[in-house]
Structure formats: structure tokens, C-alpha cells
Image 1 (cartoon, rainbow, N blue to C red):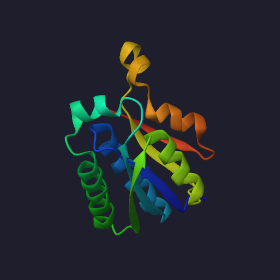
Image 2: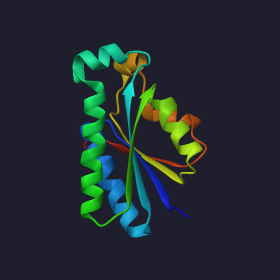
Image 3: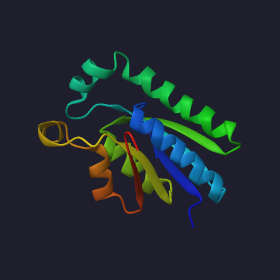
Image 4: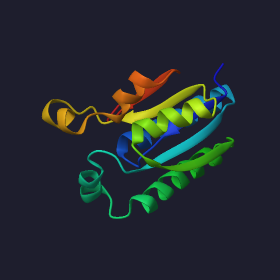
Length: 140
């Protein structure tokens, strides 16, 4: 049923937890893990870049490489992709154009003003994906 899992990661703590979850799930299902990270170009990308990343491309590459090593260590088949654009759009597009069965990603659980201003990539993916999405909340 789930043979191709798309792991969307940005290197955050919640994404690392989602990576662990995706690897465990893929191991149980004998599935392939497809790791994607998006070097953001969309709304609020400069704000995120200032706060989190000096080199968004390099950070995205490092993030997928870390997830690849973790999946390979468990003997899983893994592919990696770095995309450029608006994160939620690129994640949904990759899932749809590559025949993924499931998306696994972390969520920060922002609320209030932070959520209103920055929004939630995970929330937009859940709303727009045509396949199931597993979200792993930071700290769980």
C-alpha cells in the first residue's frame, strides 16, 4: 500500500523527528524513502533565511544528506531531491508528479500570531495533497 514515502525535511527538530518516524515506517513496510528539502523562494523566505539560514541551498543539501545517511544506515532504499520555490507547493508537486503514496513531515505547532503571519507549511500540504500526510509535531 505504501511503497514510496516522501519525507519533507527542513532540518528543524520537528523534521528530525519526522525523519525518525519515516525511517521506522519505511522499515516496517519495506518502502523507499524519498527525501525532499526546499530552498525557499516564496513568501516570508527572506525572514526565514535571516533567522534560520545564511545559505538556504547549502542548508537544503545538508538536510537531505543527513536524512539519506540515517535511512541508508537502516538498510533502506533512499533518494534525495532539493527543490527551489514555495515549500508547500514543491512538496505537493513532488508527491503528485512522482507517484508517492504518503508524505511524512514535521510540524512546529505554531499558534496565534506566529501561525497567522508565517502560516504552516504542514497545514498547507495537508490541505492540498491528494495523498495521506503524516505530521509529526515537535516534542512528541
